[in-house]
Length: 367
Image (cartoon, rainbow, N blue to C red):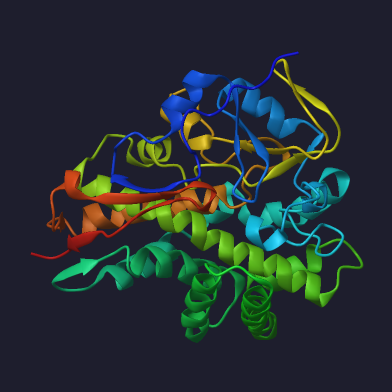
């Protein structure tokens, strides 16, 4: 049995880089298909860097999402963990049949055909929010507000609550028990407003979830949909606009997802029992990450921009429509749009498991 090589770089360091400057992916991949690093919450973490192995891991029933299987000495708040599946069932904490049942409730709401049917309205939202004069930093507001406006409208959250959604998502940047409780309270208000207004997907989801799910549990599901729609699509949209205006390609959305996937790593996973990964023996409760950014950058097959296996991103089709719509609206409605600085001067900040995002995106949309 082999020991995993130690990561030659710190994969969790916060580093500011040029927009297309290579990150840690190549160094990690060169070290091996499974490398070991020091987790931000302490102790070892095993990082999968190879596509075929990643797909096997993401489909392995012995590798679970439930934070109940995190290392016993991890501080939940330092690790940024959600409540356990027993405390708070959700798409991102449940596994096995319980997860499959909950995913079945969500899937028809976010299918490709239905999401494409909203493309016209999503384009209207993009046009409205991009209709600004002068130089504007799109990373300061648009890349956050646009996906939140879309998901709030789809769920039935009243339009005058979008500012609250923006503020609530920003509040997730400070992670402690008091902060988390405050943010969840704000999201609960958004969920209640959507359910009271009716006519949106929130009401549909309430009718579809497994029997016995409480209002509080439903509220948490809606929180997950709203926050996930922002935290991942936000970063991807920044890179999309930068590429559209400064480094365009024939297949823009796919190319951006390859170079800058919505999340550089999967969410935390943990071994339910001892697991052999390509000859490396992992103990029970071992934390695992799949380095999506490194796998995608290497160009292996179709890549893994939205993960794989049972936990494949439920909002992938919505994200794809949003990205394509923004690219189309820029081309059709803002033909003179340009970056206010050279493309190569744009910077991104890489923050390990917290993701990558452009520091700023100054754009002149008109004239």
